[in-house]
Image (tube, rainbow, N blue to C red; front, side, top):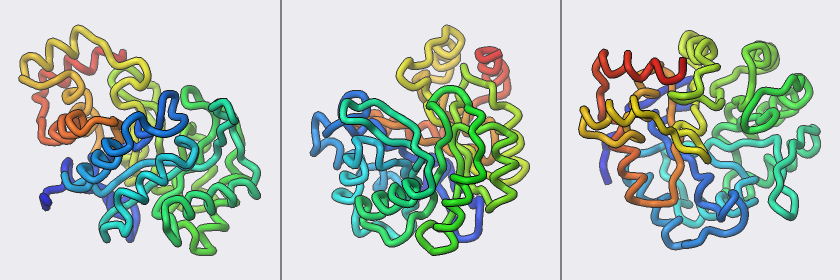
Length: 288
């Protein structure tokens, strides 16, 4: 096993160190992030390879599957390496047909935390992100009651650190008045730059900013500029997009997902790609 941590590490809070190149486990579930994987053995291999490549930051949620992905993580990696940090999310549920819906009542948030603990085989969760609103777009949901409920679970020792997902600058401020926030997880990539100011704020406050859908999500990034820059650097467009995010901010962490060992290795290799200033200037024009 390599001792090199891809992309280096970030320590947003005492007792919490994340590899900046993480792994998002969402794609290990079946189509639509629902049901079992097409190839269970391959899914387990991807998780083991991620750890083997030096990744110490895995992003997941019990509503991936639901329960499927957390159960795969437990099967593949438990007992967990001492330096592995699993970041999970609560605030959502799945219906019987796979539809997503928000669930932020304090009693159900506690149930969701307990379900994550059980399916991951843990006594405490490293980081729990409170997910507010849909995966794309920000809601005006108040953070006070749901984040306060998670803060109580943190005081009880079920959660070590708290984060937020799908949030605005104002919601971050409101949450910080309740408990420390160590991670923010929002939609952000080369083509989606609405959160530029929030990325900068997180850097100033040493909050890990995890870009979900760093490669565009269900609609992959497509740009002639990105393709041209990648060709010049002898890299794939996906590697360039990930490298841009790592260089965008010192507190950016990445959680690209894949169900392929080959794609996982390609993503991890992006952590070693240094983009020259002229390439960054070109890429910056994509989302503006």
